[in-house]
Amino acid sequence: MNAGNLAELLQMLQETQKNWVAHIALPEAVASGSGEPWQAKLTVIEGKVTCQVCSSVDKRVLLTNDRAIRWLATLPRLSWSLEPIVPPMASTHALQGSQATQVPQVPQVPQVPQRTTHVEKRVMNTWS
Image 1 (cartoon, rainbow, N blue to C red):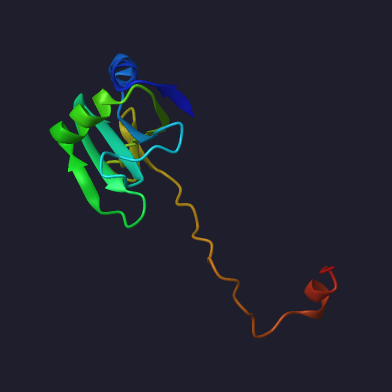
Image 2 (image 1 turned 45 degrees about the vertical axis):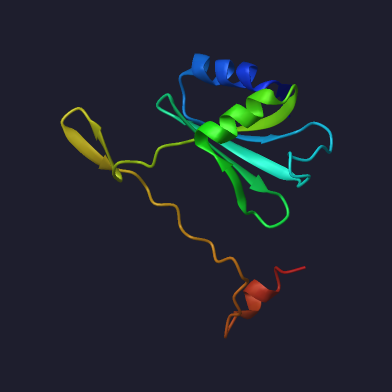
């Protein structure tokens, strides 16, 4: 977690010249003007800044873009964590010289363990 004011955060993001998402909160438990706990998401993509302040309780959008940025700028101290935005790959092929090579696909691992109908005895003997 980093801390500072909004101007420091924006300057740091601008200096990196990369795409980021900053998840913002107050370092102490202080609520917005409405007395409601909040969280903010500041996104910088190719120098364009967008912002949303949402309720921490029900995720309802409280402020967006210019109004959200102006409000965050009035707060003396914020905490934030940064997450880089990685653009999706254009294709599954990478060009090297005049030949294209296929990027190997990562096999999908099932999220839920799957039962097997039959297991060989020698395989079962290797289980603890």
